[in-house]
Amino acid sequence: MSLYKGNKMKEYYRELIIDFVDRDLSAIKSRELLLPDEPGRIITVIGARRVGKTYLFLHHIDKLRNKIQASKLLYVNFENDKLFFVSYRVIIALVK
Image (cartoon, rainbow, N blue to C red; front, side):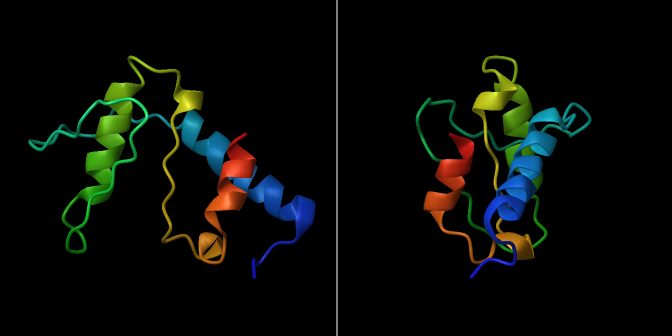
């Protein structure tokens, strides 16, 4: 069960997506590990807490924005409590 119902939920998730698209990632420092640039692939990184997984992704997304329109990229942080009960179907519907 989501904390938000109907249009309120959709608006909250819509705002999350828009905020990410508009977020300036240029100040993120480069990492030694590079992620693949293969279109149409989902990338996951697993590791211990606080080792830089999120910043690795954000740096990679910043690089991709040079090649791909920012609105075509999506990063979802499922540590957000409001996303805990959201199914992938809801996220896909909101992106469309």
